[in-house]
Length: 330
Image 1 (spheres, one colour):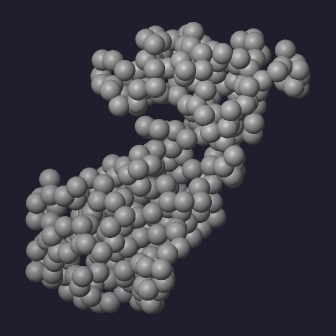
Image 2: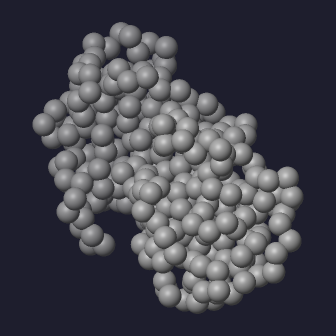
């Protein structure tokens, strides 16, 4: 089929409705455990049921394929390939070089298609690609793509967006992402790591083009911190995007750089004028504007011009010393 001949097909367009469901006559025609993908259930799944799957092979010949009831226009889906006739496939999303988890919200230029193919290329645990749900629709929402990735306008480092803190120590795993920038003290409300031996890593659910980040360093006492920020698409190769190891930083920190792909954001504390632990309270990307941040504008910036020369004090909280601060949350 000529890829430029899509317009010869009459097509269905139902804005803001998921058409990849049994309600609209969609069916899974390729893959294992086919019935799970189109039943609309995104809650009841575990290690044994509630998902469709395929084996990951070297030539990417396997996959999961969904047939829509008729040719349909979509621009908001969780897929990798589209086709009208199962012969000529158009690759519309390629995340084979990125790691992702949980919900993947993908946008693309509008296409007419009847078949959707998802091809898993990598799993960090085994050679099986598993998918619980798929949504396919046409949306009137505006979106920006750069290098095939979404440029988010709203904070995507949230629990609601399935982001997760995968390294770092705290009483609750995703404390950094709970949007609470008020309720923290010496004992709770922050995430930390031992200077020289640990890091804090945030993983959004999917790769994004990100240019800004917003951090709140723990500031219940008058200490200063130094740190740097890195990004990665695969958790193997890291790029430093902000170097603040030579300045003393306090409270709110705005980190704005040229946009680049990021599946992981790593914050590495390098100095604390009070003790040997790096603590911070809140993280978001991209940076959002709010009245709360206006109120804290006096603390905003890249940090003081020089590090305070101060002896490490094991009695400065959080955590009376760096080791106990980490041990008490494990």
